[in-house]
Length: 99
Image (cartoon, rainbow, N blue to C red; front, side, top):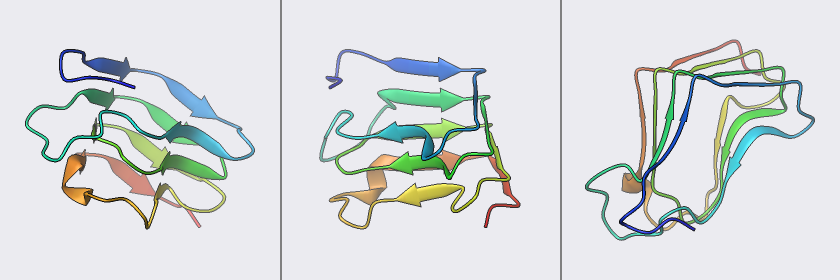
């Protein structure tokens, strides 16, 4: 669980051939507003997973410059019970050929 003083960054990684999700987020910096990105996911590739990126509940994340392709279900799955979608930002990503 991140707090407002920490920044977590995953950069230039490959997430592939997972039976469920390339990466799963849950309860990362559960804040009411997002002023900075406490969790950064950048320049990474997600392919041949069931979900490329699964965003569970209570998250504050930014994802930029990623490639999300050829996943068996959704490229990005957003949990419908998330309390604040304004805290999730996806910018400048290549998202294609997911089912």
